[in-house]
Length: 280
Length: 280
Image (cartoon, each protein chain N blue to C red):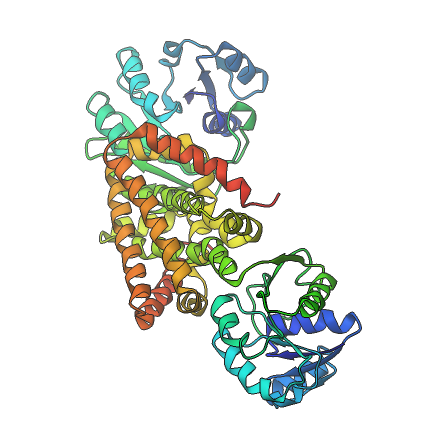
């Protein structure tokens, strides 16, 4: 197939590397001409062009720009596509994107490859980034089955684990396990900085070890990512945060009232539940 | 010196291994005669006895039982000690212990070696467990300087990093970086289990990866440890939880009101603050 990658960053570049090795012809575009040149020089794509419309000839177009640019780019491309062209994306929130693009392009199959590294940009692109990782596809009832199957083949060829679900289900699931942890973890760091006694604050900083390090990791990450989650997955994140606050209040009340039996039962439950989320 | 270890578990056993290698004579006691025999057989101590009062002849007695047993054991020992005997402990909360023991035994120097492994018990004891780790000592104004200096020498010989502070300062610092993270992390797991849609819950479990794994780690740990923190460091933990809830409410309000500028500033601050707590 002829596959076009719009946005040659970590995800787009890594997809291109794998798909080209699998025998597809890869087109790529970036607003920056240097990135286009670099992508060809590195063997990431066969052809690159800063002109988005040069991608219109592909069989499958994968939209990998920052999340807020996905729908606008789709809308610029749509008038130039033939009806069989499959549009897909890699955005980490699905419902708003699917709701906006699907009515304009029935052959849109929302996607979310759940892989990454701490690095960003084309230089960080790597082979086999998606092997063994979840790759969510979110077709709607009106998405042609043939397009879904083509996308499933592509995902399978990357050796990812396919999850097919409703866009809203995807957004709620990632709110729980990806977006809520960022806010919970950021609030931990923010709370510690509120310690007014400088001696205690410095001692806390000196004594912090793996427990604090792990719990604060995602809250101390890229602020743009956290902001993106809140702006684009607002409803699901707020629902998760509300449920979280209820649990926090319950914990606080049990400690305030010395309800040690209930606090212990709560901690026993969290110990039992966690392994369901953790792969061996 | 003659050093006695009361409670031959991971911490007591590891202390004994290092101190014996450093040339001290080690006595050890455990309520279980088998543990006493094992400690001698493993070379952890020179002599062991299930009779607590056999420890009274030591120059330094290190109390390493579960936290609620520290003060009662000190009180059983005190009538049998000579005035120069130094009592110390390894409890992870200091103010209630120091307040109770110090008036009865001026030569008490509260201690908290901040090291551990996921394992427990004498079998898990290991050499060099405390090398490069913080070891907090919490003398009061009335603690004899000579006893503090003896304890500092012991801690230095373990190659730990000494922190001397007020017991209340210690408890507030560990509330921030050790006890608060456990409750914050447990509430995350508890909140996720509240998802009522089975499809979403299963999808969340399937998609969870390193972000969820790290943020939920300490909340999915030993319930007894979390309970101990809440029971013994109640005031400092509640103060930290209250401050935490304020930050969480601020985060929720910013998302509800689409205050993206403020939310981003908050996330930028947490990104900037975290490195102060993380050792390179």
